Length: 570
Image (cartoon, rainbow, N blue to C red; front, side, top):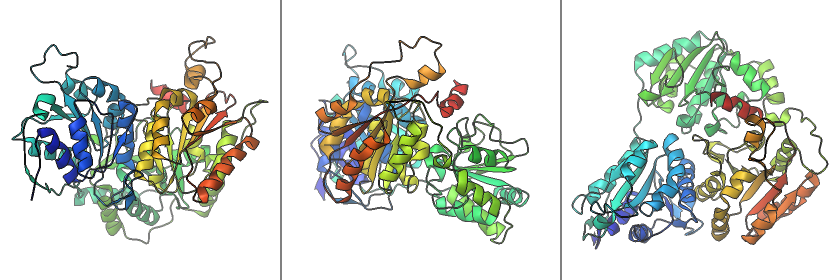
């Protein structure tokens, strides 16, 4: 047996390490220095970010993309990790460290990302300290869970409780540790062992029977899978095949049905005209772990007047939260799909899976198969043409991360992904500037894949300090900057003539990238992508390559259709 000590801070870090957290991201200050080093001593890899906001979203992306079924290798330790689940941890200083991280924490909380924020806190007696803020109130206000280490006597129970809440309730938990408590003497026999797994809720027989009846009565069923279905793809796909249903996903589950001939891609603002038409013609829509919110259903316009709407979710509060549903099934998506299939049987009619529908999907369901409109420009590249060319150049085994902005539909719809673990979309809170952080966290979680970032010039420049982090980690990151020298969404959707507040002089982003130690190229034509081809050739040969920043000067597309949809709800 090992005795930990000598302080609460040491015990906090070592207990989290014992419980099997996967990776820690943060910025170290006096309040979190000891806890962070204790995590590292316990074998948890640590990535030092340049800003706490970057660290928070890195941990969010890591938690989303880590798969307990894979043996992952950290670029820092190169040691295999089979821990399950692999939680991301954020380590921040009290007060300003936490406030710097709040946008990333808010995104994680809105997305129900299971992760832990290890936050130092001011002593209760330090009422006049400049570091003192009401951390509990701040955290709770954005939808995260605020918890606390109360004393040396309770430290183990407090840490285990926070970890259990994050895992079993799929919540972002901020574990506050006041610096006077952190410095108190503490010891505990270890290692601490606890089996903590997310619960799996089996649906009732009555719910299963209602869903079976709905499927049997449908002629054109469509299944839409969301984040809650990411671990149940095979079960849902098998049921869809037996049900004659087409399958689609929300944006966050993109890639789940990658190889299904009847997969429609993303439902919602990113849908192609063919996908939107086939979904809106459905007479049964079943949401699997999917909110069926305004983005996924285009403010309800993808739900035809004849459609019966069913929602399957293991969270009772999620049922009908965004729109009325005729049938709500409380249950784990995988277990529900398996139970429904057992009741339904495997020899159902083709329903929506006809040869004609299969041909339509193959010919035009992907946006890259839709003809590209010519954009008049002599010195700028059409953003769709750029995306299609890069999709062909970049290796297929990739993980694509998306920032927010007018550009975002191009990489989301035109860059293919190998499966649901090849796409990371941190856009519940719709904050620009999270893309680079997302790409780094996702790359740490899936180091065997090429990380690809789609971002705008505004978001990239907002977050560019973390390019230093990508360079230090040696990540072979490809950052595609859709550069229109503006906050394009505001130019196209919110202003009337006067664009001075949202347009900027042209910036040589490629040169800035080279200053960070990355490679940078400027792209105005498809021919300029020869530099990307050369970089990919080096990467594919096994050469260690630095991040590549592609400063693509894009032509005006007249305003993206997906943001026109999204802003209808603002």
